[in-house]
Length: 585
Image (cartoon, rainbow, N blue to C red; front, side, top):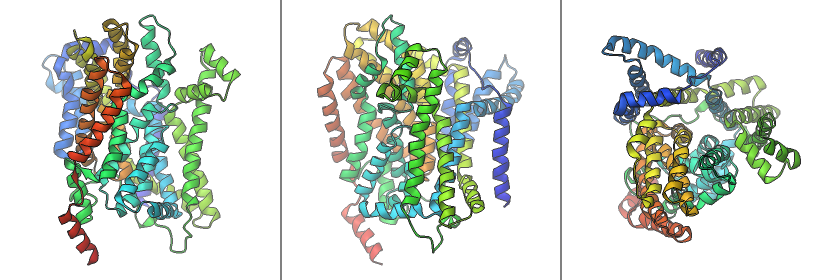
């Protein structure tokens, strides 16, 4: 009861803070540029401290807090008054935390996470999760089929990376555990099918933002294009997105791994330890309080219906929210489109892009939770009062995720104010031979998104620079321009995918109940290998004029060969013998 009161008090405090803070901290571009000029290389200090400490201490909260403090300390440092900078730097942490929480998008993400946590608890208590696990277990009869099913579910939830991480993990975790797949590998599969698929899906919460950047970039060089057509043309050039998705399939089919993931998978197969000794999973498995009662009839519908309500509700919410945003705006062409063809593909695409995904997903999760409560009460599994208690208790394990997200967003705000990205751009950009530009853009986008933990911010920073630069270097080649644009979009996703301070990386660790740093360390090797292929086998040949219909198939074959011949078998004869003997006992 005391824990429940603490949780309720925390939620009330969050609500009060949201209501009490009307605006988030805004960063003036001129101030950011001035700070970049003033601090120079020191602007890299906050993200470096956060990332290095995260690996050393394995404590994400402490690392992020010190990273934020190092940034606020620099911003408060005037002259040699260190004591003043320490005091005001500490106080400014609170300002950044409040600013992060006051942002409607951020508040929606936290509420969404908490609500989906409550929804999963209800589904588990109704026996829905266990029923789905038993049904999928009949299909997932091996580690290979289990990973492929997880991958397919990840592709199915293509419309939003946050929803992907939060839905797929809890559903597939019991099956993955039964097949002795390490939590690190489960987290990798979830993370690698979140942003990579959302970033290239023809309809998703990402599309509108990407289209706006492309449109504005072309306008800066005096050209009017169909941004959506350009977006579609970039898809084959999104080498990292495509190759990382296929990398998962190859590792599952060949049952070969390398680097830290090989050690994790062999540990899980031979000893049954899904986590290393001393690991601290971001979300613990549901306890006995969420286990269905012995007399509860296990029904797959008790999981499928609430999840479908969540997904369908999200789709309808994206349309409705985006429709209202467009109709309340000033773009006459879009308004006319919705009035003339409200259910056309173009209209759906535009409304999805204009919607506020964080609020819509929170609303959909809340509605799905209500449906789950009614279903459970109607089947006399629990009363409505008990359902609310279960729902609230289901949020408890996600409180730490909210804390980490707030600190990550605060660090991102500090980094923006310091002008870290502007400093990196000024240092790494310069006179370049045309063929190398797409590769340099990919690397630059990777560095910025890794250091800042945000793909959206990186895209917003680099796209206005990339399109004019690519046009100036090679104005005659349309494919060259497409390759450069793709390098921004996919490089930002690669860096975000690797970063321990990225919200999607954090959510993937939470959804799979994996130790966050273990997830980052095991995933990093794979991401770097795929990124190397994307650069050496993708963007350099494209920059030299090689056709995409030759480049992409060769890269796909190369990824398969790397997994087959660099990767080592998980279940060696010796390991398999030990595992068989253990099971026989």
